[in-house]
Length: 236
Image 1 (tube, rainbow, N blue to C red):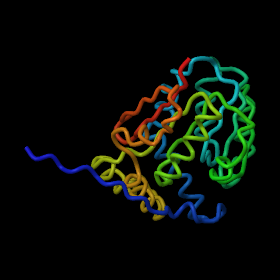
Image 2: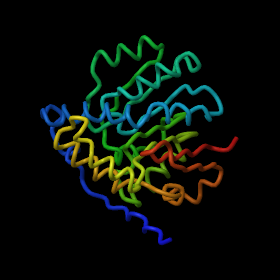
Image 3: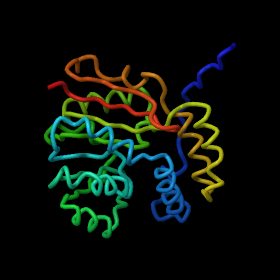
């Protein structure tokens, strides 16, 4: 039986990234993404992966945090076990609403927003350290060289990285072409396909981890039907 060849990784600019944050198409697409995250089970995937953390964290940074809704869902799941966590939500746009900040306060977690490009964070001196760095549907936006630079910075500033990314597979590609059935707008319908084509398979992310960071354990696998999970943890 002939095996179908693996899908090549194709990196393309996504429409949402270039839209003004107040553009009605962007507002609608972010709403679509919240629904897609729920269908993909992203919060559950991340919460289960975070269970491997060696100790309750004090500081977490999320890359590409968007409106902070996903991290708030994680805070609600984890706050009984992890009290008094300080979260830094990094994004190139300031999208965190006051009610989201209030939601964090009710969990006992504190939240800080950092409006910056990830390249700026990578280039900064390693002054602030984090117990955990988190990324959801974010790393696939970058080429291998950029991912390698991000991983190098993370390996120097954090003790754990958890990334949930699109799974680059034919089933996920088929599903991405059907998001219109969920009522997704034209931005989301286009970007969903581009995200899958830029996603990951096998041990592609592990191969980009810096060779000098040999004191890390790497785990990479499929998660659910449509997600690809990468977990890097500093050895104790």
